[in-house]
Image 1: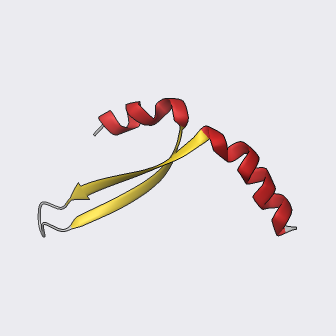
Image 2: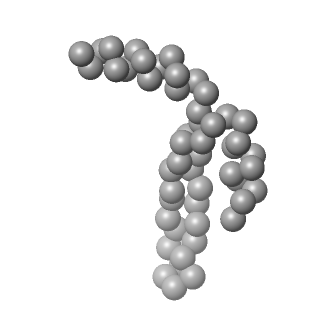
Image 3: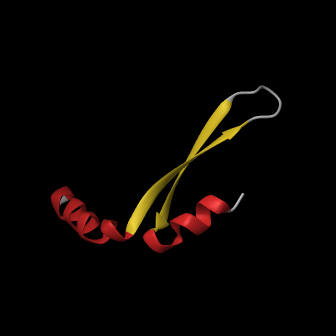
Length: 50
């Protein structure tokens, strides 16, 4: 059953990109990363948005 789910995600997963954004904390100067799945045509819009 898991193989069927994986195969389904591979077919529809080509429309999305995994975007990883890095941000720096103003209090501790530590970096944090946030991962988001974004449609391919919205990647540039997502990255320019703050």
